Length: 284
Image (cartoon, rainbow, N blue to C red; front, top):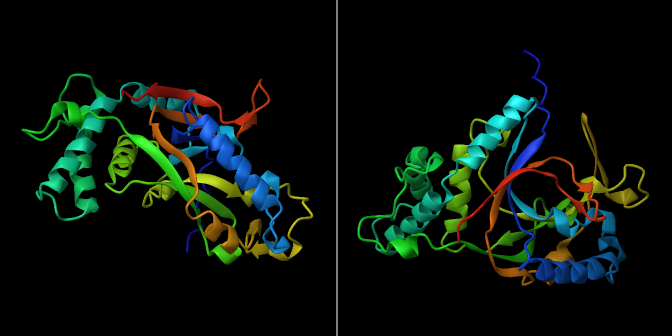
């Protein structure tokens, strides 16, 4: 059996930034309350070190990761970003809502996403071809912007032994999900193949990978995995229950789509955040 090829070195990621002028005070307040509670709960076994709690400036929705190892590849990805016709994509996701409500698309979200993907060739130009609302639908309504509400606390693994906790966007009509899936289709040539798995929109709140390797925390929560470095796990069942109804931010307009560099850094203003390689405004 041939050896498994080495994993691609990840350099960038496609994302929806969540920190805006409107969301910042909401997120800051919710994060402060969470940090206070999680860092000193009644049950010491559930304690979460502050270094595992993600800073405000790093919050985003990841759509996919990329390995852009040359300036040419970076520029090619940014060219796709700059030429996105986000207004058409927004219109398409809205018209999908209209079709579903009128009973013309009852085969589930996957079919709707497939139909959307098939029409995306026109979303890379401003010529008006490609994705358009259904005939007879209200054009103004079709271009209505997207708003994001983050709620709850969820675990990527079993909450009794987890390393990642996140907040999820409320998306009952799946419109935000379709918008993000459309972007993934357009960036498919740049996304790392192993990462083309079903999209789970999430804003990471806790990730123990950011704990220093020499941390004395959770000796009993250190889990060894063959061929990989140790993973620090925690019992977050109590926190998941307590923050089930927590609203981290409410009705914040989706303002930008960005390509950022991997690895958050401390900025000139002293805040930890990801460096933006390129970004575009979402019409609204």
